[in-house]
Length: 583
Image 1 (tube, rainbow, N blue to C red):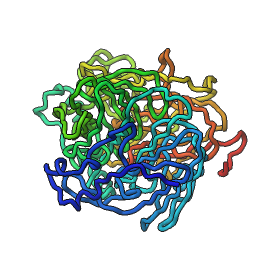
Image 2: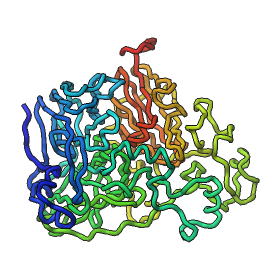
Image 3: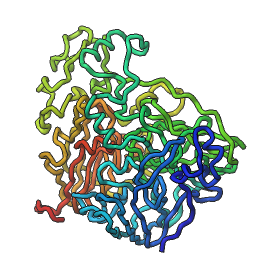
Image 4: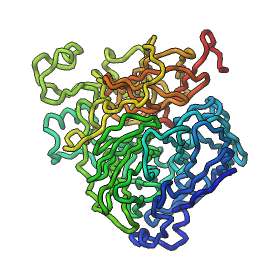
């Protein structure tokens, strides 16, 4: 039986005749607030039988209305609340005139229930119902979304929370689920056409001759390479409205608290393309969970949450006042904004967007070298400069064949190869390098319970994240999904180290289905356990994986348009000696 515990939807706001600045003031309490009690007040489904209906709908934000794809008529989709150890049957009706699907992001389940059309099941045909059924083997904060076409951009996503069977590792007095996302009134296929037609189409913050944040030598270097140091987000605030639980910044979603309470914020980045830098000015955050896995509590003032990651934080507001939750887009082209307050109607100051960041030579895989720096021996050995002479513009195009690994297919889709990529898991994120407050990095995360498999990796696999930014072509090892990409094969039960090498100037949140991995940070306190890792531009990230889930699993960049353009592959986990297609 499905239990409906709450209801709120901005989809109906247009019928109220609300527009512009008057929207927030006129919305009823159910449309603008979080929980008054322990649990969040949002459309919530629980039990062993849950019904979801995928449908076309209309969505209103900021006084404008556009076409959406929703589940049960709400955006985000209903919160699904389960308990570790239960079984669940999710009956999903597709009322669209096209195929659809639901992927249960981060859940450990049989591969044929994972929800990726063409890899783990055929998809859900129009006007049919598909039943997902699996045991719940974990606890934590997760989410679910379409894996069909670009439906996720249209609103096909929702939060999923699993309560532990035993004691809660991080007790709290109240909680709020905070779903961050990006919304455009342009159809996603129009967005794709625009970024394919012109590199940096949505970049309205291009470098100019009068910009004072870059030296003349650096500007000359970027110009010679025909690259733009402000090309940080392919699609951004020039078309996006950034949402918190379906509310735009002016609508000010509000989560309530009583001073002194331990408030748990379950923060999910359900965006299609937007990486956020999140902070609550005046209120420290204690991170207690990452990607659904408990971590040793670590206090910070700001963290970056990449697409598809989740972070649970505890805040303890000490005063009878409002606090602003600020989630800036990584390129500072806009923000999602919400409020934590003791009472409805309270607001706090909303900080202005901070200065736009720019990429550096480190983001090109130059290991921190910049224009004017002396030519280092390792660069001289590769023929990039004269020993002892100042660095000048270098050719990172595919003309430099010495940089191309044998595993990478060379072609028009590979625009550059980073000459000196380095591990950047301990780097502060772009734009936060000089912030005076504490900024979380992956090196700060330590598992509360160590990963159960203590074996060292028996082998390693290098996977290059490749693309041509100008042509908006994306791939793994220079091969697009369904265009000659050989599946990644793991023997069932083997322990393997996967090295992700980013040969582009874009961040790539890489996600593997059906598994968790240990992100290798080299820290004595242990390696965090995750299902998604953001690989910084020109950087590397390694993880140790135990291939304990037989079947076919998607492996991809979680920037939706990068995945759609080809940055995806299949991981096949098979018993020893079984190279067949069936698990």
